[in-house]
View 1: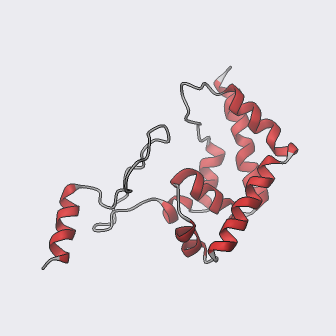
View 2: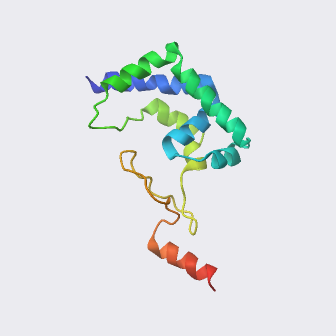
Length: 147
């Protein structure tokens, strides 16, 4: 399969998310890309957690609709199972920038505010999430708390 046809199929996701609406689409992307919690989504989008949950279910339902699901299912079938990552094409990247999803949900260091590295989806996520970007920040935060 050529790279061009894969990118064209991914373009459909940005189109579907635009039709869903900015608030619902942003909540969906926050969960999909940043594994954001309902609490953080509700704080950033000024919604109740129940409304966020309803929004996620509604967006997932729209993505399952036959008019939208066909191209997305073809994409998933064509993706190589040895490479579970999906390309984010220019149109989806532009949508993420336009809606400022990364600014709202990118994990940041509690001490200095620098962005944290997000582990790839293929890695198992066990234990607690990182709170600090480096051991130096972790130690400085400890010292500040215990002075």
